[in-house]
Length: 174
Image (cartoon, rainbow, N blue to C red; front, side):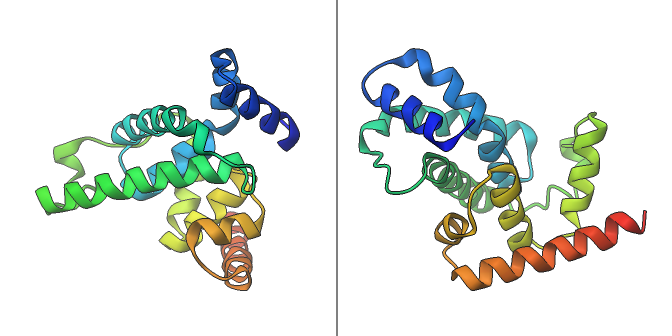
């Protein structure tokens, strides 16, 4: 969906038309989900935080101003909620979920496409992974990504290009 169409849907939502929420959700859900999953590394918990993200966005929709893209705005909400949850859980239980996967069950999806993407993304460090997800899945410009990750534009562009080289090399060596 074009940015202008999303802007129009958001404007309608701000005017009280809840019928456009589903369209907004479907246009932004992948970006929000993968941003949260990148932080929490737990599929079920990420889905819960994603729900909270959209509820909070609905609650605060009147505060949204179109100086930044709606996608960047909602991702920031999701990222903040995920970081809050991550920090809360870190204080509650100091256990590595990946290391103790036998206790918590696997968070991997049965979808072959998602497994390939997850495998490739796991080869990136956290910063690279976040930037790639925001740019590719979220279809955000590097400038918008730079604001979300709080890094200079040049740094974001460099990290993105290095990550893509790494992914190409890994994919071609399969």
